[in-house]
Image 1: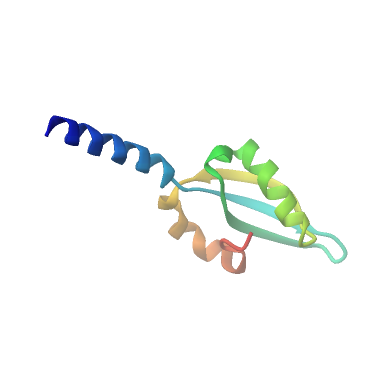
Image 2 (image 1 turned 90 degrees about the horizontal axis):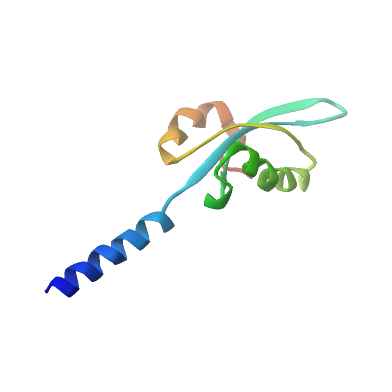
Length: 94
């Protein structure tokens, strides 16, 4: 029984970190004509800092003609709802 409990606790501990989610809110622009947008995007857990998220987001945005200006912050799923209205069409688009 003790072995079963130890195995169950270990399995739950391994599942927990894999289920973690990381998001970044950012500002981007396009030139001619100038367009700006604020957005929210999911980034990998390995890039869950503003500096690392920049490296992941910049190519995604560039593929659609946008230039990343800056990553404002990174956060978990608890911060999504409060940013959804502000991001509008750019909520989890990139």
